[in-house]
Image: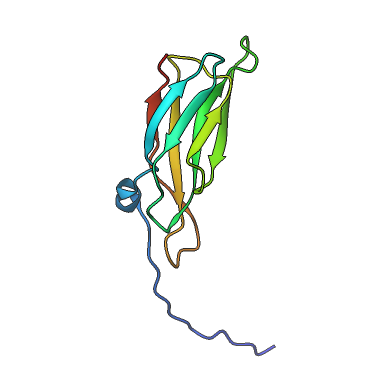
Length: 118
């Protein structure tokens, strides 16, 4: 009763489309499909402290008759990732998640798509 709100002003940064378009996903140095259907991705170094992790999206052929969309989270300390049960001719996408200094929410880079070659 008789509680009053106090007005407060604050400044915030808005991370919109231009900022997101400027974000660079983690570099894929190379990717190679092995004989057993294992995709090996060699990563470039993470050179931005705002990078939280990278996600790889791919089609999983564990059940060849019913492939499913899947993803794997790659930590910044990993320099190589092996993804089993993929096929040549399919694609995988890389999205890097950033948490800018002082931000409350993470933002993702635009996806970069790569074709899996034999």
